Image (cartoon, rainbow, N blue to C red; front, top):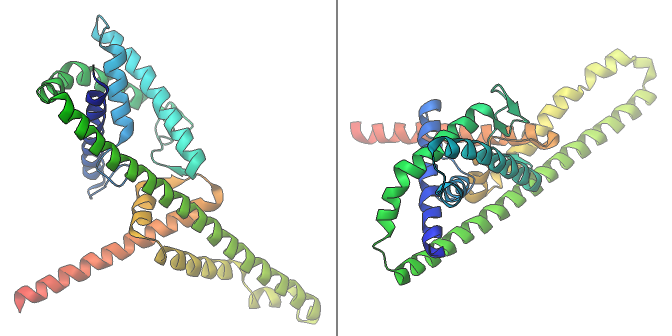
Length: 280
């Protein structure tokens, strides 16, 4: 089996995984949901899983062996991928915490069983046709295709990793700015309290509300940070489910909500303009 053929299969299965994830999540959420952490239409974890299934399970004598191997293998692959990406970017691209029998929200029995069944479907149902698809392609052509796929894929990975690193930098700066401003406000509050003891503590609390101030400053800083994001950074931010980092989680979710709100307003505005043009 030629290495270029394996890489082509990896890309094709990654694209098939993206189609499945996107359709499933879009139908489930009743709105378009472009899945995957990368910019292109592929989910590499599906490609890796399919290739491991083909390499490790092709010689198994029965489907049940393939099923159990894929259940265990998919659980290990999902957990390691989730843990690694979270450590690198503090972001989460799937979270099974709401499902029973989950482990740290990274894997769950229900999904592992589903991937076990998918392993059987891939090995016995899909892959025979995949081999027929790639078999007629000469090796030199496969090598050229692999180089093209690899260049695009590597560029996508580098661009996505850079955008995620920049997002984390922006989130860290936003948190620091909010904390700094609140600390400054707190110091002024203490100073005023010492100088105006005669006013009474209750009156001073009415004059300066920390929660309202914090909310206002957070709203301003989050809006400013969101406005500074590039298209690639917006795509990367919206691709993840949430940020497990306690300080980033609230701000990251607010940024995603702002992006979603602006998109809805833009769509409504465009629809209104189109209707006006038609009636005109």
